[in-house]
Amino acid sequence: MRVVFMGTPEFSVPTLTEIVSSGHEVVVYTRAPKPAGRGQKERKPPVHLAAESFGIPVLTPRSLKGEAEQIAFASHDADVAVVVAYGLLLPKPILDAPRLGCLNLHGSLLPRWRGAAPIQRAIMAGDTQTGVQVMQMEEGLDTGPIGLGEVITITPDMTAGELHDAMMWMGADLMGRAFAALERDSLQFTPQSEDGAIYARKIEKTESRIDWSKSAAEVHNHIRGLSPFPGAWFEIELGGNLLRVKALRSTQAEGSGAPGTLLGDLTIACGTGAVRLTQVQREGKGAMDGATFLRGAGNLPPVIR
Image (cartoon, rainbow, N blue to C red):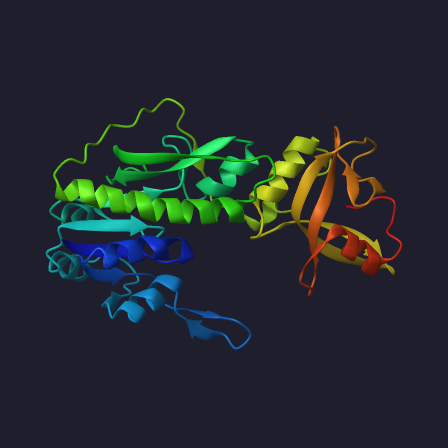
């Protein structure tokens, strides 16, 4: 088939690889390179680099709202478009251009967690399962009918990074199966229900700070839902200075006390219960286990912020 693939981050690369390795004719749309790093040099996103390694044409429009871009998109005469974490809204002329429409790989069990951050929000809410689904796109936000899906168990200490990676590979396999069914004209779509629809809003920097007054379960879910990026954080006072520390891994623990009280071995009291931090990261340092952090930090204050 003639395929327009639209994606940007690492999450998209295995699905692109699956489609290319199946012998389809592919053109790639991705986000334009952005300045990054200390030198602020323009850095191509992972999908761009992968497409170049395959010798595939790459297009990086800033928007798809203009008539010229829509005409250019239609000129590909695509059988289908595949969208995996692209990052730009697709207006109706784009959605209508491919003969078989646009398929989206979405990281949740729709209609739960429509929107920008379904992986993080599922963990932060304490969900015990989620999934990956292939959806037929329409103008509404993640409202289209579902073609195929797989369920993933969210284990008690699983981080967003771990769930991301599991979904990334499962999603590539799922899209490969969807393509096989599409070629046989046997891919059937089921309309979504509106019951249980929840919006997974974008993660904001302002919500990264840990609130120790919440329950241990909520704090634990907050930490693992934001790990490894952007990272939930707290502050401790060392040598008269406030030091910001990211909490990357945790587990619920025994103990109680005033919220923020250090109970020992990086076990910290919450509003109810306690959490033990098993992996942290100081400013300007790499990730380390709790014991290593304690050896380097010396005497910690009795309460952390």
